[in-house]
Structure formats: C-alpha cells, structure tokens
Amino acid sequence: MRSMVSPIYRANPSKNTSGKLISGCVLAILRREMTSPAENPNLLGQFIPLHYHYQMLLDKARMQGFKTAIERVVPAGGTVLELGGGTGVLSFFASSKAAQVYCVERNPQMVQAAKSFLAMNSCAEVVEVIEADAMEYVPREPVDVVICEMLHSALLREKQIQVIDAFKRNYRKKFPAPQPLPAFIPEATILAAQAVCQDFNFLGYRAPLPMFFEPTKDQPLTQELSNPAVYSTFEYKKELPFSFSPELVLEITNAGHLNAVRFVTKNILAMALESGQTIDWHNFYLVLPLSEAVQVAPGQRFNLTFSYEAGQAIDVLAQSMTLCGE
Image (cartoon, rainbow, N blue to C red):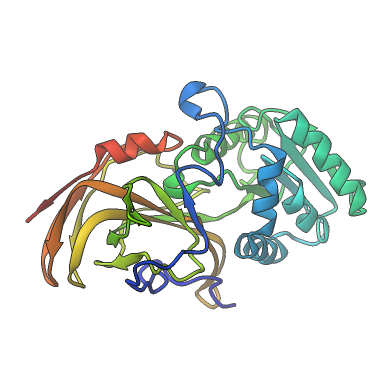
C-alpha cells in the first residue's frame, strides 16, 4: 500500500513564480466559514451548511483516502460508528463491508440530508442516521470501528480531539475492559510548522492575511525556506493532546524573505504495519503571516514558539507566534 500523499518532511514542491493565480488557494475561512467555536464553546466546532459539503465531496484526496482506509480497516460484517456524519458519505463507504453503521450528526438539516442521500444510494437499511451530540453519544452495542472527521488545519476550529476523548471515556463506562476500544479512522495525526516566503501581493494590493492552500497542488505563491518541523504526533487510541505550546527550531534550507509560517496537518487514516506504509490525507496548508519579515540564508536557525488549544480560533494561534534568530 503506497502513501496517498507526500511525506510530512517532503511537502509538495513549490515555485516562487510571482503573478500566477493559484488554484486551490482559499483566503481566510472560505472553505468552512461558520460560527466560531469561541462564540459557543459547547458546540462541537461548527455547523457546516449543506452547500459547503459539496466542496468536501469534491475533495478527491479526502474522499479516496477515507474510502481506501475504511475498506482496509472495517471488518466484513462488522459494526461501525461515525461521529459527525455530515452527508453520510463515509458511512456509505463503511456500509459496503459492515453489517451495521451508526451515523451520528447533530445538525438537524444534515440529518435529513444524510437520510435522503443514503436512501438514494440503497444503504439506508445498513446505515442508521441518529440526531445526537457526538460529544455525548454512546452506541447501544460495542463497535469495531469509529470514524470521525472533524479535522481542520492545525486541529483548529473543530473539536476532533474533544469528541474522540469524550467518546473513549463514555464508551469505557458502558463497555469496560476487557472489551477493547474500537479502531479509529484516522488512526493518528502529525502536526508540523515550516518557514516560508509567501506572496501576499494581489494585483499590486498587499494584504498579509491567513491563507489556505490545497496540498496536492503546486504553490507558485509560496517558497519553502525550511523543512517542516514536527511539533506533535499522536494516535487517537492513546492519550490525546488538548494544547500545543512547542519551541521549534527551523533551520533555513533556501535563501529568501521569511514572512510567514506554514502549518502542515497530516492525518494517518490507516496503517499497514506489515509493510510499514500508510494511507494518508493532508488538511489544507494554513499559512499565517509574521508581524515582521527577515531576509534569511541557508544554515541560519530560528526559534519559533506559539501556543493554542485544539479547536480554538485561528487568531489565537496567529497572535501567539514569535520568531527569533539563534
């Protein structure tokens, strides 16, 4: 099984070709611009309107990665729980092998949409759509696999960590050991940060602001200045991190104008231990401008610090960043 995307230490190559429009660039929060979790900390993160789900269904890397992982992990005749089901597409993938799939969704509009779509795709008898809070829901029977895709760049804005942690605690209360925990899709996440030179010039108008870029496409407006430095690696079956406060050292590999930090979020959807290979999916790259820019040369080292909690707003991370030379 080959990796579905490039390794974290080899982000897709970029070219410093100013003036080209970049396909896959999303400014600010256009991909998922909804109520911020900071406005209501009790929400799971965001209610994603139906029309935004169309964009996620079009994301071939996301769809193929999850489909391949689900086909590998779900046992024939098994039981699957999806937390935050959205349109129900991941539950649909699971229904090809599972005997029973529970699809939990809190948004009433999406519950009705998922029921309709699943019926259209002839799997309503296998997939039961349940309107419930994923933070509180516990299945009525043990499950083999839990699917949860509440993932955002750098694990901001959505509550993937909190939901899976709550599920494990609630599940253990209802089904104590020796009943094993189910397998999780994704199995793990790797977070990294990278020094870059970002072109913030738009037809002569300079606007340094947060940007999202599709990781499967070349990025002519972004020049990589260092390799990604990993600041967190964890498995969802084990203890989960709720906050991140790293002190990273970024060693410059290419000369340029260091004016931004790119955050890389690599999700290991499934692992093939026998071959040492993985099925991966990257969230969109998140590029955050620095308050001050500096000209850099290969061999220079910079200390990067920042601090945020999983699920917080992008501004929290952006405002906490500090960069200084060694």
